[in-house]
Figure: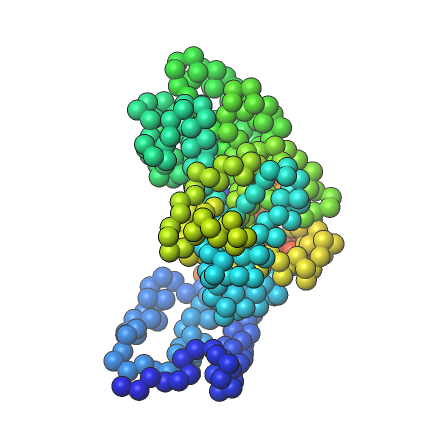
Length: 489
Ligand SMILES: Cc1ncc(COP(=O)(O)O)c(C=O)c1O
């Protein structure tokens, strides 16, 4: 059996030409697939299933790259959600900056794996340098360190893992790494607001602490954790023999973008010797704004921090990071493997990042941050963030001025939760109507917005990460929703 000699990108001239040709062909069909301003083609799940049915993905003989590219052109690209469309306002899901698409190509072509230096020499040095510079950007102390992650969920899991290990080791004198959970593990408590991200509970489950260990603290009207109630709950728990281990603050809640009071939470943590984790998956991007970065003041006081670059920072999935104030805490994750991260490597100046990560094989996502920061610079990035915040305020004011809409709270970042409202319709009917409006926007208009629950009622949501969204887009959204509220009733 003969193997083709153009399987890989090598120094061979033909391989290089083939790579360049294929990249150009792919780039062309991708660019050509942007044919309108719509965020979605409108196809239903059934229609999509029909479109791909009958494609046997492992034929005896392959079809070849060109034929497959045609399928991608005809079936996949037209029905991909266009996240860069100004009609896409649903989730914390960024339109990726143009330059960062090229970063993806570069990092995929190189396929570096960040677990050990010998799999990623320059990539390791870049990641270490990006992390160090980010520590400075967030005003973290010299003892701080971090690592790139797959995103907020993994970073939150890391925060709570290190919190658990710190708590068991330092406070309970129990080596959880060796021995597993202490006998009275079910007394451990994690406090977080009732609207924090579900990955907090998921982490508690994965860490063997269970959902019951998570105390959901009520929020105030502006959707921030009620710190007075929190302190009362902690006191009550201590008095009944429970063990407060961590507080997870949300720096930008998923729905409202509300930011918990980090300074007050940090004081409470110091008073009761509790770990403070900041889930800044959303709000971490505010650091780039010259005008608004003070909204996340106090982040430097947290023991660990979740940062997501595939949200406000406008980078492609996946790209997240996790930081700890005291790098000693990373030792909980360290495990030496003879084949990968020998102790002598570190002594000789070869950094193997696997020791700080939950993953082994890991992407060179740091390149995306490095290239974006360098390409755009502080001023441009600050303007991009501020435009989204300004849009959210504009939309809030627009809705506030009308009596056929309701809005939950003034945006602190770039999300607005609202609903169409008519005082002559029951809440059940309003729930149905708002749900139908959202679905119809997707399938009839190619406009994709979010939906959530507030006070047991269905609400709609716009998440305005895309700075290209204009005031006209937002006015048009209100107009279309108003029209649908009549048509769909
Ligand atoms: C506040 C918050 N934390 C964590 C996450 C999870 O992040 P990821 O989707 O990157 O895992 C999200 C996702 O939207 C979020 O909004």
